[in-house]
Image (cartoon, rainbow, N blue to C red; front, top):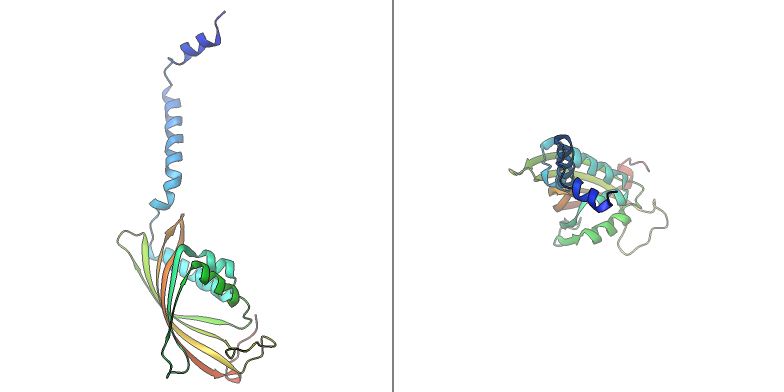
Amino acid sequence: MRSLGDCYKKMRNVPISGVMRNVLLLTILLALCVPLTACQRSLDENDVREFIDKADDAARKRFAPEICELRGKNFTLRLTFQGHERAIEPTEVEMDRALFCKEAGAFSRLRQYRLERKSIDIDVAADRKTARVIATYVETLPYYEPNTVPATPDDFREFQVVDTRDESVVGIEDGDLVFLSIDATSSQELVDKGSISLPYD
């Protein structure tokens, strides 16, 4: 009777059939290609436009986790903010992803908010891995006096209208589109609460 060792010695010299070789080759190729999917993806203008639409919708819902997941791991926001008091110099702020996500959590407490995109220009890089997006927005939201704690969400006298120009870089990270960075310039104006109809949501 042949031993298992003898059987192994005999079988290891049997050539693999053409079909089997193809199956093994396909398996190897799939294993190699899956991790590279993100690297092989390329952007076009429609991809980027859909992503910006998605990001704007997330902002309108003010749902912090969804807003945050659209920012890359090394995301940075650089903001130059001109307040309504024009005699005071603009404030410059830089946030990393962690701080941005924390602020997004506070933003979610707003009950009146309107975001309108006025324009958008998309420039996809030659390598189709990133895109530069320039967009302008108008945001309308309650203005709460500094250093005060509103008794209710309706405890304010004026709305703030904020005009913003965003210059963002969108790229691919782990197979998904994300914001890599945003440079924003904003200007704030205050208007009487009774002059704007902004429903609660």
